[in-house]
View 1 (cartoon, rainbow, N blue to C red):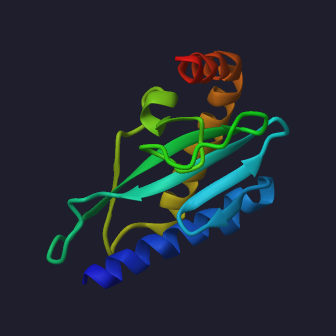
View 2: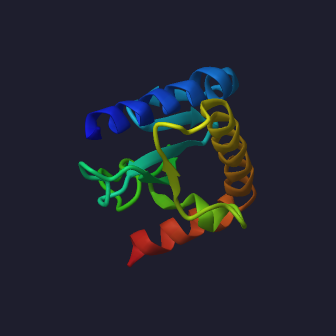
Length: 144
């Protein structure tokens, strides 16, 4: 069952990408979606929970949002999203968004795909509106 649920998450994410995110410019690399926004890359990483183990019927994952500024020195590792200068959980970027998601073999793929795509779009707008503040935070941290 564990392999089935892991495979299901990959299928669900492929659906989200193909139907909703690829048409608006996102590229998919495993469980990370990235989009070129000119001066920065925005990234959305789907992180499986550590509580996902064989025998558990409902698996959990988190969505991490990240920004990589093109003119700053690359950062190889970050606690939420690799290759980003700033990152947070989607729930802190989009008020009211879930802190995590659960799915199982009976998950409605269409509803899931639509919900995730909507929240990624909302997070993208939220990040863009706070980009100057985020950049200043990154520069301040780098100076310390």
